[in-house]
Image 1 (cartoon, rainbow, N blue to C red):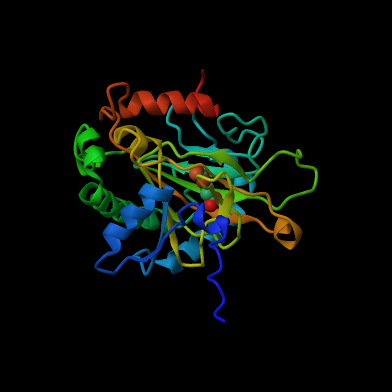
Image 2: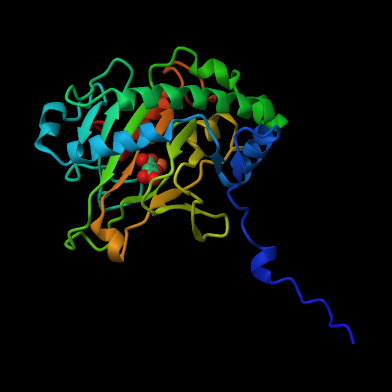
Length: 297
Ligand SMILES: O=C(O)CCC(=O)C(=O)O
Ligand SMILES: [Fe+2]
């Protein structure tokens, strides 16, 4: 007797959409990329044009630099928003109480850059910015009609000539064991900008919050590129593109003894660009930086 078909497990029928892994060179990459952003806020690209040897070089020189006294010459300036922020001052994500277990350096075009380091991070920045602009074109072309009607101007025009795009080089130090119980490497948060380009870190930890309320690891083999939408794209699209909550989980076991490096590029419009009836890019950023404690209230 043939067996009756087994019922579809409920976990499957209610499963949140998965982050798509897409070959950047494929003819259908733009449409699949935008589809994944719409449904998960994230997409992962393989075979992309960013030089991965350059990324390894940046890790090798910035890992010791971010843990050295040299950072004292380049501390964060709240006016220019660039420079080094140490673990003692690090961000407190919106709605969280513990500081993140991380140190980072912010770089803006024409801004400060450690003179003792090579220009590897600047060369990566140029590559990531060019790719981000291309991906924003993909979003504009394949956005649903409702999002396109909502954009106050075409997305590529919002970034033309922008000097607000931020390169952040992050070092999450090895855990010492005395960290506050609730502290994460990066607590649950959303990014503020339009799109984020994030080369997959060599250490695990990046997780995305699904619509079902479950945390899932973002697929991220070495050499892959993680892209996510930020609050500004959500705002400009009238909520059609979600800005998805993500975090970097606190490591356990062997991984806790290793530092983790990451280098997201946050694509920002020019400050005067209107995102919605309520906000320009500048007013939106200002509100969010105050919440993060990176600008005086
Ligand atoms: O370290 C990572 O992989 C992600 C960092 C991140 O989400 C951020 O800095 O906004
Ligand atoms: Fe983030």
